[in-house]
Structure formats: structure tokens, C-alpha cells
Length: 384
Image (tube, rainbow, N blue to C red):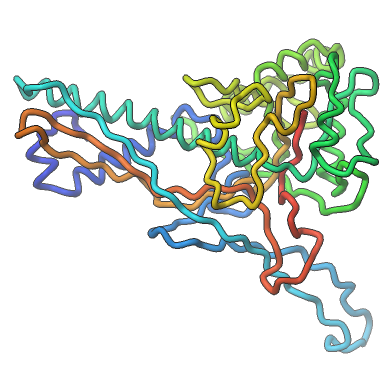
């Protein structure tokens, strides 16, 4: 789209505003570390659903068949399997923001500059809001966890009554290391909980992006997401340093993932940054509860656990291993772009809003019966 678009052209042709909205949406994903994880399929880390109104919606998944089937000449009606449908209810909300031009539009060039700059700033704002919502949803109310331990790599949490009681055992010197990451991968593959009870294996996620040359790059694996403090701790682990010496060429992986720090057991380890007022990033227990609560859609969670709830006397940084459908996102395919003259026609207002529903994947049986999936994170294991 040409940059030389007049105010009158946008007002008189709604399709131009729609195209600007699509450009803003595309730009909002360009620098997001979550972009390769997003897609419609059930094998994506962030599964998306098209939602066009404010009504609650119920994404559905099919659980794995567990029946033994029949053998030989046995009749099928002697052993029917159960097709279990899993679902959860998610509530959308609208997020919006606006910018006002300086007084007096002296020239057409000034309008073009304002339109371009406001579009860029609003795209960055949407990315910030959305990525913070992903992070708070992912970190809220872990139902499974691996806790670092200075001596053994990870703590024995088999006797703990809750995830929070497990993380509150963290002491000075307990840092991110290879043993705890391998433990998380093992738990994901075998369906083991922090208290050694059996749950369900986590399905690996498919991450995908398209290069400028049109080449599609894909990766099937679990993803390990850490904040920058955790990445620095991991880099001090001699086993990690030795491992990366022999990791080989990760050219495609580097192009696929933003912040790739390395690989462990074929699982990418990503540096997701640190949460500050100026940028989204992964959380730690020193982030104010109010900051956490301002960036999570409370309707989509029966319980809120801000980062401080995971800590006792020692600060705690949170990370996560994720698989397919770890997060669920509903909403429109692009932002809506608005433009109008205000203040007696002396100024121009550019605004955007987007319908978004973001939640952690946590599914239950549609028939209401309890199952191994009930009240359990579908594809997330916390790291602390």
C-alpha cells in the first residue's frame, strides 16, 4: 500500500482503513517471540480461533482414544471406545488505544507522517498488550512444576500438596540448570506430575515461519521459555556450555525463533526477556501483583496466582515448558483502524481496537465427568 494516502481517501473508502488495520496487525507480530507458535491447528503452541463478537466461546479438542478395541472375530459392539470431547469457556474483551495529531495539519506531508508514525506506534502497543496477556496467562496457576535445586538439579516435590508449596522451597543458590530442564522434558513425555502422580503426556508443538524467500521452516518439539535471568544461570552450567559446543549448525532454528539461546534434547530454549514497564517479558516474584492483574483477563481463570504467590523468602523467576495448545487465543483476524477529525477539525485522531480472548489451555470433558484432563494445564509445565 502506498504511503501517500489522504485523510479524505480513508474516510471515503472504508477498504483503505481495513487494509491499514491488516498492516498494523501484521506489524504487531513481526517482533513478537510468540509469532512462530501461533496457528489454527491443534499442534500449535498458541491455538487460534476466529471470533467475531463479544460472546463467550468454547474451543474444543478431541482426547486420545484409550479403549483396547477388539481382536479376532469379536463383534465391535462388545467393546465400543469413547470419543471424549474436551472444551473450555473463554471470554473475549476489546483492547483499544488512540493517538491525536498535533494542532494544525499544515500540509499533506504532515498527515502522511502522522498516519505512518501512529500506525507504527499502535502496532507496537498491540504487540505489547497481547504479549503481556500471553505471559500472564501462561504463568497463572501452574498445575505442574519443576523446581531448581543447587545440589540435585531439581527438587523432590513428591510430598508437596501444591505447586506453590513446591516453589516456596527455593533457596539461595537454586538456579536454572540442564538437569531440571531434562526433568521437565521427561515429565512432558511421560505425563508425570510434580507429586509423581500420573497425568497425561503433552503433545509437542509445531512452530513455523516463512522466510523472505518464501521458504517454510518448521520445528516439532517442546519449547522451553525462560527469562533472561534464567538464561544467564543456564549459561553458567558446565553441562550446558559443553552441550552447545556440539550443537552443530542451528541456522534454520535461529531464523525460526526470536531469542534462541540453544537446544537441549532437540528442544529449543528461548530467552523471552524480563518483564518491565517498557517491555513484555517473563515474570518474577518482584513484579507487583497489580501489574500482573492489570494484564490478565480475570474472566478466563477461576483462580489468580500472581508471581509473588510462588515465592517465600527467596525471589523466584518463572519459566515454562510448553507443548501443543498451551495457550488458546480467540478474536478477529486483524485490528480495526479508525480515523476522524476532532477539535473543530483542527486535529486528527487515529485509533485501533482488537477483539482478543487469551487463556491458558485447560480443558474438561463436555459431558461434565471428571477425567485426567480436568483442572490440569493441557500443555504447560512451570519452571522455577
